[in-house]
Length: 103
Image 1: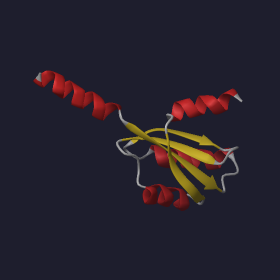
Image 2: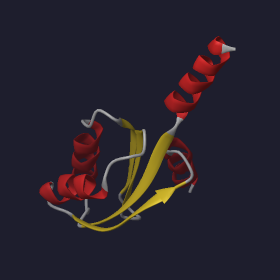
Image 3: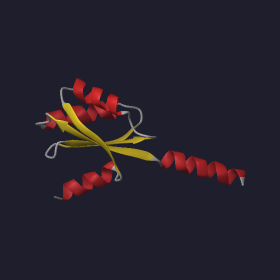
Image 4: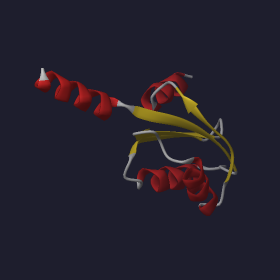
């Protein structure tokens, strides 16, 4: 019983991730997108980053409960862009990436 409890705890804590959609103003080129992706990827809890330049948003998938909004805003504002909205989404970054790459 103890082993099952430990396994259950491990599986539920290691699988959980938070995915945040960050709407960004000011991204106009691939270099902009690459810079934001690189900055967010440096964070230890980041699992995946998808930047959609055409739609002006970033998807940040991170372990645990996600990053605090003020930290996300600071990273993006320090990179020279404005954050207009941050919201939680149910899909993973990879699922969202595949949706937009089909178009």
